Length: 131
Image (cartoon, rainbow, N blue to C red):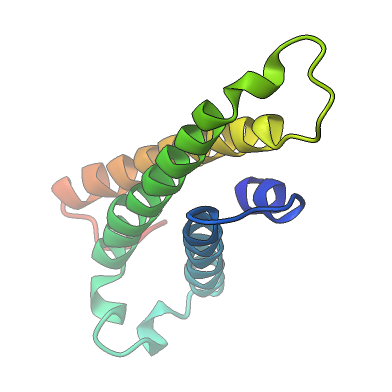
């Protein structure tokens, strides 16, 4: 929802990085989910034997890191456009798009954090697989 919200509106500046971060995290998540769902993680060289650790690093470093940075960028941009929420302001403004993207990014970062903590708890119990 984050990258759809950003891409559906005109964006500029640092929002390009936020869009790149969201799409990259989304595509890598789809790839890891597909490999996990099909049980084909053994086909990935070097990472196949460390699949739980791979998912842990993906969730905590890439997912939380990129989405937290993107959320911060969009929150900053929403703060810069907060004058648009005044009653009677008639010009086109991206405040609501930036604010909703920031909220969606925060939710996505929290979900990646919960997933990473779940993988971490499984790793602490000496389990090696996702399922």
